[in-house]
Image (cartoon, rainbow, N blue to C red; front, side, top):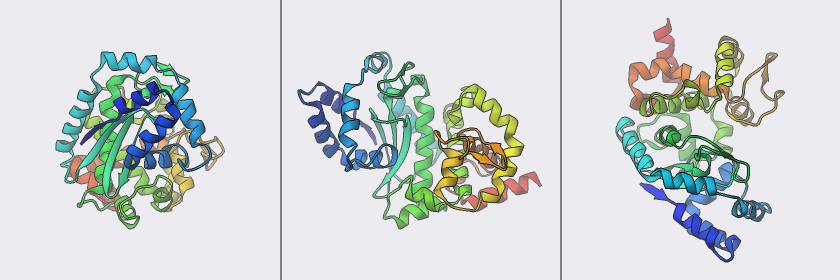
Amino acid sequence: MLINLLPDFFAVVRSPDPVEAYQRYFDEHRRILEPYWLNYVVDPHGPHFADVVRDTIAARREDLVAMLDRHDVVALARSAEQQAIAAFECDREIDVVLMVGVGAANAGELVVDGRGIAFACLEHFTGVTNPTTRGLGLDPELLPMWLSHELAHCVRYTSPGSSSELRSLIDEADGSYSYWETGRHATLREHLVNEGLAVQAARLLAPGLAPWEYYGFQRKQYLRVRELEPVLHRAIEPDLDRAGLGLRLRWLSGGMSDEARTVQRVVAPERSGYFLGARMDEDAVAELGLARALRASAAALTTVAARRTA
């Protein structure tokens, strides 16, 4: 189901007391906004909530308003949603949320009470970088690609037919996904194939983009990861079946120091695990098809890849 929070957010900004209005907005949409804050921003019940809200309200959004005048983002999102439902053979309902965010994430996934949520923060899709909103300046035409990526995660996390580690961990957590807690207990192999499958899904549903855009890379970063690919595969191999939040952050998160990303005297480029995971999944997607691959265990995906390269 498509949920458009943009009108409610702009009503907050126009309110005589926007900070108080944001609290009401947060309370009204708590099912979405509370886990969004917990996973991608800060604890909404902690001391920094009000500071972040004040910064968010004060941000200039002329670029976002202009983009929304030029592009029918609801139609873009609805088309991406319908394509994903068909291509991924969705067997559980997933919410697609359009919103204005308060942090660095341009898109992401959540699971609340066993229901997947794929969200996009549209201040990042204006085509213009904006330091007041932390907007990344992504082309709005990239929105379907990013939503496809997040919808693929939701299928892997919630489908009754999914054999993924992440689905089992979410089930054990009463149907809730946490980047931090779930991420701490899943193996690095599961994290890699999970992101790799989402990249493959985005390629299928949004073809024709520059190859680095599917990873969220700049061209220079993409070329460097490709150059280092054999070295990175050797460096990551000993840790594939280990679990730990540090491993996830090292290979799949931005903002980590060079020291944190150094493995066997090699500094892995930021988020290079997206590329490695996509390479690990290529053969399985080709043999099983995307819908089956999204639901396959990491071990099954690895077995298919090993067999096809033997």
